[in-house]
Image (cartoon, rainbow, N blue to C red):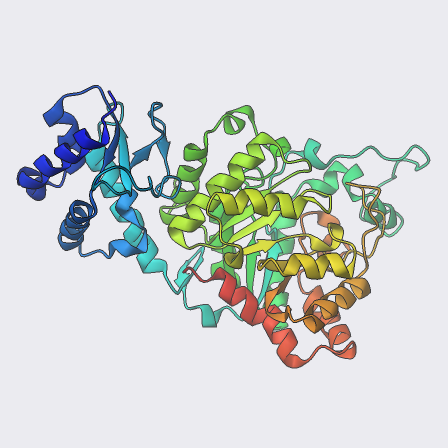
Length: 481
């Protein structure tokens, strides 16, 4: 049953004159019970009445409702009963008479209204407690403690092998013996995704190598690693491994939620609705990962392809919704086409996403001219070059693209600084295969500190430029607002 604006206004006035809901806090449940109707499509609330509701709950729970705009605390898509985020339905616009949005829409199928309100109250409280802090796997920390931060790494991940697997070219003979031996490592570097053993990134040898590297990273002045462990990449014991590693080595670890690309997901995940995906991210950020109390501190990496798949569109929308609710940082993996970042941001912004709290990853393999980079940087997001250490131009995932060298990465970053975008650059290595770990003959997680920073200084970067890229920009991005 849909109510007209006049009927809604009369209902609101009647409720305003009743006192029962003031005491037992289940106002919306009482709406359902007292009028005993099967479906309320919309309750249009006059401004003064809405303010009374907010003030009452604020007094009861000592919470500042301005933080989450809970004037749309529980909403469903009209006529469907599907729960939407508070951000998705913000204002109904002006109606006839004295009725003015915002509004609430509730369904008789959602009868635990009181429970839903309490959950939203808890969400607001968690967000308020995180404001001005960075969430690590060991808990919230002061942003000033992060130090040198690499914003796109993988300390452990369990990506299905078929997602990145490529066949070995026919003119290359099969490797003999240990693939990481001196005689074979050159082939592995050239064709890293042709060897499954190279792409298994959860075994004991990887774990030991990563722990050893974190000690070395700290020794060279490193402070924080952002582990982009979204659903589709996350190992079963990701939370336990990361907390143990952080405790043992003293390195801050920030880990991610959200959803990786379509091809990394089982059908059960692909079938999720936007509201289900948003609920999963809220749980990871505010409660804990997969039944633990280890909380994520970032949404990402949010996996996107070119062209954007339907699931990835849902992923962007749900990420934007949760970012708007919580003030958390987001990091996005774009498709391998120069048009992908712009398409992604169009979807993301329309859903309420904030570019100033968002990183666009992998730009060195996505945007190939200085002009394109500067134009993209002007949109306001953080620009990430995160494939430092890869010095092989052959790019297996898109052979039409030539992967730039570190020297070219440095040159492009310097151009962004000269164009005034020095406060929008973050960097990393995106290590996710064995051959890039030091134990297996690779450059490792300390490559930027040991090898790239000296080149930056020789190429004209000031110490302030470097401090922004390594410390200030990551700190600002990772801090909850």
